[in-house]
Length: 356
Length: 274
Image 1 (cartoon, chains in turn orange, blue):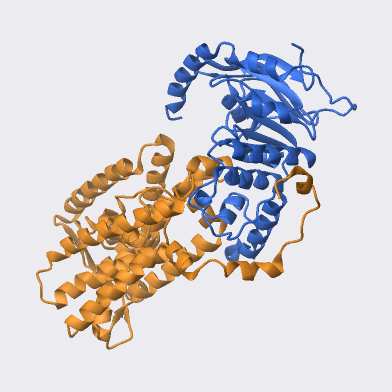
Image 2 (tube, rainbow over the protein chains, first blue to last red):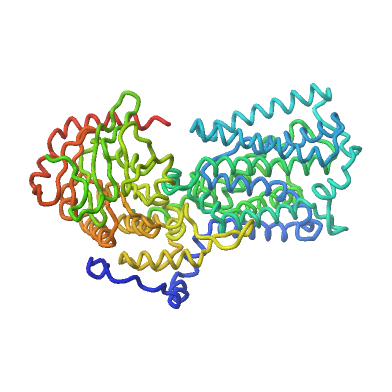
């Protein structure tokens, strides 16, 4: 076949009829193992079944309303963080961003007497701006995003406390329920559905965002570019992918998803603590990694991150329902993260290094 | 030593003319007054030891860097590239050494990265995956590679196959000039032979090939023109038949030690971000 004489023959027509038959040659196991989220799905099943059989409440619809609530508020930013990690970057400011967004919206609404919807819109614009600044700094300085967003993390943490104290003389912004537009905004972002079980509306947002992110990643050009810039930014640039635009867009998406969760929490509680969200950035990253994202970028899935968030949500609530001290959840997170990294490492080696 | 001749003997203007190209990085002269021609259906070999300026040369041609002096002309028209995308749109495709593909991505995703075929409009615009897989398989078949599974990560292919994916990709996207950066340097003897066949094949399809190499044994059998760079300058330029393999080897060996030093210094410079 590689003989120059045969190589010069006219192009063969596309082997349409052969395609399906040949695809079937790839074993089901190989195709399953190639899915980044396979480990997370197995782990979620095991953990879910464990708590279903060891506690009374966990397996009920009311129990599910509990753990899906935790999973959804972690899962929305975790999906964005997963896209960002596939694109080869980190965002440590994603957790504190939820607090910043909630406080920003609360102050606009309560102190500046804005309609809630206007405040929400401005909050999203504000969050997108911070995401843009994160991305722009990373792209321009070529510093690791770990350091750049660590700086953003501390800046936002300081601003959250400082500004909130200066304006309200307390460490919280309260009284959101008296603001015009609160009812309708709360119905969309903070409310519940399916009474009497009262699932949080954030669960629907979480599912929708996961579906959208999965579609973008698997089916669109932007999705292909995200894999490309994370897998090898130089190669991607050389074939014409707009690397800076993709990365900045990913940082903005992450900030927006965090802000969305901040808005949801502020609305459902009708108030916001200045310390909200600190530490959650690690939960997002853990969810993404458990879901199959590589720390080095270029590999992972949005569904995986959602399943990762589900695992964390199930563990948090399951530990509560079991009557154990909830401090044990940290130990659980540490162990599951370590296991996930080991599995991912094995997956990458078999994908990347089989034959060099 | 002759000046690079315009035209390929049959009165046609050369496909790509490179005229007194210079590139400086700060006070380092990476490339100084380098000229070459590339004709349709011919292979121009650019030879030089490490640090001779080969990489800078390709980076200017492919739009990664902008030249500080000199001219590029395609079909007689003056060119200036702001980005690799612009060079690609003009039909100059570059296959970078080791950087041509993303190892963790599947073959078809790599093949179309940056130029994905789409269906649908507006927010529903999406990659035409079936079309992409079929096209990729057809194009690779033309290169003599039978792809079993388009979803296979490129990292699991052999070095030669990865080069083939990159070359097939460039040809599919209408490359008139194909720049190959050291395509054989990381490969064994057998794999190198396969890649050399791809080069011959590209030439037969009427593409002008620029084959960058430090190995005269690989360049000699496929080259129509030979250009030797030494420490950023043009050391000489010959047509096929004007120079023997031994002379080529001899010229390449000269000043090797100094080149090594320049290379080390330049590598330090290139490692700085920006």
